[in-house]
Length: 464
Image 1 (cartoon, rainbow, N blue to C red):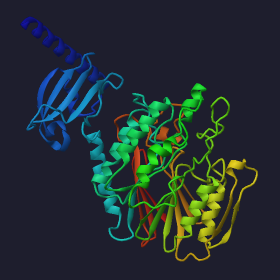
Image 2 (image 1 turned 120 degrees about the vertical axis):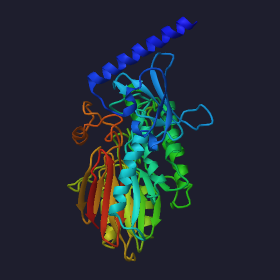
Image 3 (image 1 turned 135 degrees about the horizontal axis):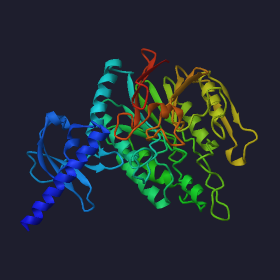
């Protein structure tokens, strides 16, 4: 038995030496604990760049398949359970970043967000009418172990974005849709939505849940030419009740994804740009592919009108997944995007009138009346959206449209990767892997500031 143990120990040492040589050849100085590739137990601390520079016991071991793992256990722990874990990834040629077993967050990302929050605090005013909203969009969570594109890291990005709550800097947070990629089987994507909902909801910060064009699972149906993999209202039934249950969120009904949140003189209103009827043909396939049929229908438009008619003394910001109009003021949705913009302009101009649509299918026709003549001291100042996997902005009729980059990792060598994200050359475990934002709106200073971390602009400023 002793001979076997000694032989195994020698093999571990040889294996460790080989791993070190490979790391040196690749020259990947990712972190100080990458050098520990020999099975054993080590004492590490600040000089190895540990979490909060604390002392830990580092345990290096192999699983049943011979894959190296590392675990960090506090030296004063009452049990043997590790606090941080990671494994060696041959695709990367190194260990992945450590993940906290309790929170699901990487401590190197928490450090990044600590610096990000410090930067934001230096540039924003504290006090009334200085409101911070956290923005995350297009996480594209997928049941795939990918290191250069959509995958499991979509859920990790949500958990790490929530760290901003721990920093007590947010008045509201919003996910602007495409929570998942919608390319896995229906039962799998249902569980993905549940996991995302559990990760995003909060008892501390009011949150907005917006539906994206990938959240109906139509991508899976298209790729496999199958019947609808989601039943009617599947996203709505999983995701929206937890949003509407909050005391700080207001609504007309709970049917369409329209909700509003007030903070000081500001009002935030959510819109569902994937408002598409669920109609099946004889084969059980959808008449409208939600992925490509972006739209707003009459009932949702009516709720928006009713909220606007009760919005005196408010500076208003709309939020949806897709932008309703493009920078040339053309319709950016399949149906009724331009109509929504015209409604917001009518609100700002205190007009009374009707919304009518022409040359559209019956399901998307509009016949809404509105009267904003009694509104006082109110204005729609901005519109936030994702969907385009890029950053952009344009001001039309006094309304500032702001587009946010996708959180989902878009490696430079994938066909779907936008030019904006190719420029970032995004990489797994690196600071540019994800993207998220804090937007500060300050009506007293007539200023809106957009701060970004990861694959995003550091700071953008707008007059409001």
